[in-house]
Image (cartoon, rainbow, N blue to C red; front, side, top):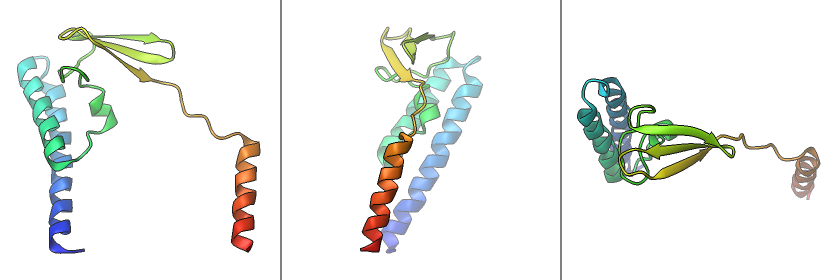
Length: 125
């Protein structure tokens, strides 16, 4: 690995840690300072975009997909269960976002066995 790749990986790891810290601070400070938690969330998003590090799924659900407001259920958003998805309504912009909550199904047993058989035949040849 060359020097620039190594440096890039180190900076991405640091950025991921900072994103985690900022979302932690946002959740801690929301009750006293909601505007400060909004700033923490926007800083985490900016760091994510600058270093091209994805925001983890559990934190991404806490951001409005339209206005990027830090969401806390009951305070600035409404959460409803509807048609096998979690419907979140932001009070700031009024938009809805839907997060499915069904688990991914495993492949049927017959298809799985057929795939394993095909792979074993390819390795024998």
